[in-house]
Image (cartoon, rainbow, N blue to C red; front, side, top):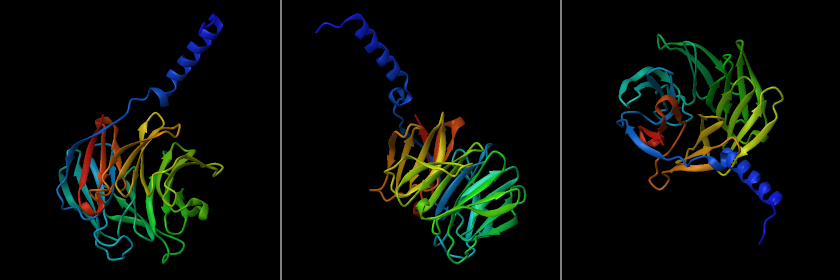
Length: 288
């Protein structure tokens, strides 16, 4: 079949445009195990990088909604050595964490606790509206210090801004929110566990847009860079989700019954850190 010059040029331009789109040019990623800790951690649910040399690990050490005071925070080095197993203790099933200046914010079943990172002591707490029904889960902190907290059981997202603690969003449309990630001052990424979706919420209008679905029990959300994300499914899967919504499964440990809870990504070392929950250890993967 003969192609006329105009048609040929049009096809070449179309091909060039397709090649320029990141979802077509992105090289598939893979995870290569780099290290794992010993198993002295106790139901590690969340891990958070301090931006320097330390990983904070939230250990539930019991049931996920038990007010038993047995929960604690560990400090682990970037090469997987547990430097301080019980850096601070006396918490109730701690889960999500967020850092701002010298404060570590951590959920404590029905309350948010602010811990001084220099002393390891709790400085202040904020209680959920309905303490008996609350299940505060993940934490994220925006660049300006605004703290957002998910309540997975009560379909709420709390906000702590300028020391004002309030229910910022609520309703069944949240579909049991868990993972949170503040992107700048205007956007909040939310993992809806009921539908296995990653959503983007406009902070100014509270308008929600679904970016990707099919991820079962969405848990941790961390930025990979360039508008892309790593998202964990608590059951044992990890996905790479592009801003376009295209997703790629990078890990599946469900058959081995190894969970992947609230993950962290250390960009400067290309390390994805996975808390294994009942596995009682962290596993680090190099992203290649």
